[in-house]
Image (cartoon, one colour):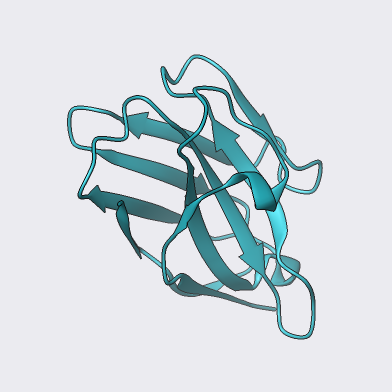
Length: 125
């Protein structure tokens, strides 16, 4: 079992930045891929970014490519999402999730086995 806790969300103006953190307990993350997903009000949850177990491979949604950066510190059992040049469309609840069955990341939500409770990101115009 893996417990995930997201933090770092908040209210920010357009163009601002936030660094989201995902802290894990119960199991080491170093063997698993981790993803970030988000859900905007009235919309389905969507893929944002993900990273392989080693940290050597990562992928991004087209909407955030060039603005967001995912990273991980396996020594701290944590994964991060640096969000820059934020836009109102980035508003939503951001979730981290662990793909406990593979070292490799993917974009499909159903492949992820453990989820955190989410952290709210609100970007004002």
